[in-house]
Length: 303
Image 1 (cartoon, rainbow, N blue to C red):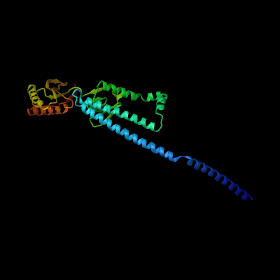
Image 2: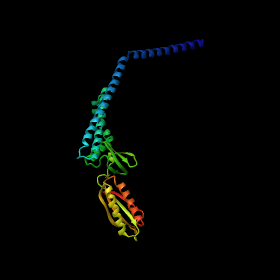
Image 3: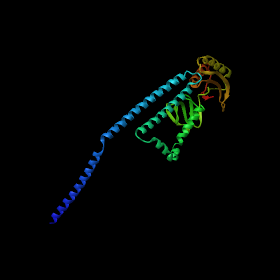
């Protein structure tokens, strides 16, 4: 009798569970069958096609806009009143502004297609204005600093600069960052707000100081004559020399170290080749004449 009651009880529980599973299955089946799948798929396909068409449209706009900017500045480069570096700076900045503008309108259009109320989001952004303002302080500072860099013409694309510990050539100037290619080839991205002191090495002629150390017992007049002869011989071969080499005379460098100092003014970037060539010629001619020459440190500076 006990086993009979247990079997009946188990059978009743199984029946209840079966009924519950059946009701849930029927509910899910009726729920999914009530969904208009054709309408959902149609909307998804429509949204996908709209996004693809919008993307293609903005890609076309981006390509056309960049071509127009390129052709405009290609014509502007023929204007003799503007330097090439200045034109390249404005060109890269124009591309930067155009790029951000296209991105803004692209995302605005995508959100509108998706049915997201952009106007409501913009209006509601006032609630988070404090948080956004704190987070955007760096961005705003970058943009404002970049604006004054351009306004004051602190540097242009192609200029040789020193910004903090970074030395190199300005590659691009953007709304947020300035790109500098170091002399070892490294591309540095410097936030504009971090640019406090800039040393522009391209705005003036470069001055190369060459000190030729010699023994005090040597004939200074004879050495000076040889140096002047080398200057007269080589100067005409270097059109980048802006002022003819000048022999400043004997310089006391302390501790009894005497040297003959030569100063040469050149265009920016040409000073290295010129100083190497003149130094090699000085040493060769002086040694041929039998003079004892010590090591000659070089001093290249911007003036």
